[in-house]
Picture 1 (cartoon, helix red, strand yellow):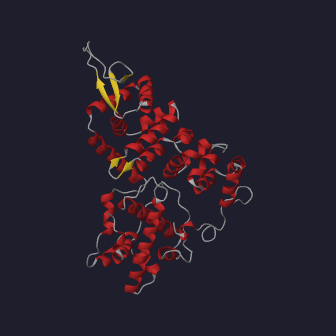
Picture 2 (cartoon, helix red, strand yellow):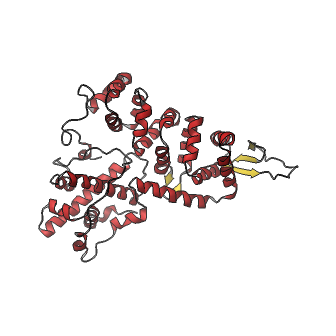
Picture 3 (cartoon, helix red, strand yellow):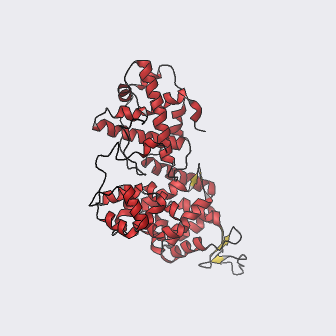
Length: 391
């Protein structure tokens, strides 16, 4: 990540969050490594919003030690942005992160699967299985809640990937169960697809559903028998696309226009487009942007001349552009470096376009930034150097 994306108090924050006495992130992180209990006591005295902000600035693998020492982790964990929870759970591992999942809300858990369990337009078998293992480790009540929150198409696809289900006919008195099959009710017999797989995770989920959510149990096992994996993938992809759009990640076909060539007269038409980008709930923590940093890209320096409302609109426009770049470039959304990397590319490419239009039209960068949408500046910058075209 470039240095301008890592700038904190020096260029942006006049008064970094303090925890009673002035404690900045490096000091808190060093204390957390030496004595997590003392660090959590210092952090726990701060307002919840400050706690969430500082937790998100700590490397994901180091967050659990601090979270588990907080006086109210059950209030802080559900307040973490969805992507930050995903990064934390991935970095921590299945067994060590189960207690965090217990406190996570349904939207966060669903987002973890949406962000990390897909590869392109297909569900990723191993990643999805790791998430279900994590959910089961979180306890019976948690896995039941998650089973109701997740799309049934995802659950059926996962079960189809792990097992074959054979249904015994009601009148079939001479039925012989398949070798190695397991059953919970004498009607549905489960056979592992992989040698050596004891089906421990799927069986735990299905056992709990059979005992207390029988309608969901029937829906899933019948789905394994009768539904096509390709159709489940298609429906799951539709539901996922809608949720990702709510988090600011548009469908990929809508993002590829960022790499389309400019047409004659398009510069004049682009100046008439609306600049407004509505705010939305951010799935990842975003540091204050370095609008005053001398080595920041030109769009940040130009944004420094905007009023407060203009800078707020610029922030969400840049984040929307970064998310679109991440989707267009098919970056893994569950990777903590993907969105910052996309933001770096978005800012630097748009800056190239900003400087080019300012030169061509004899206007200041600030005037160009006020006149042209950031996605169009990105397209101009990309036209100058098309080496980063999405594949």
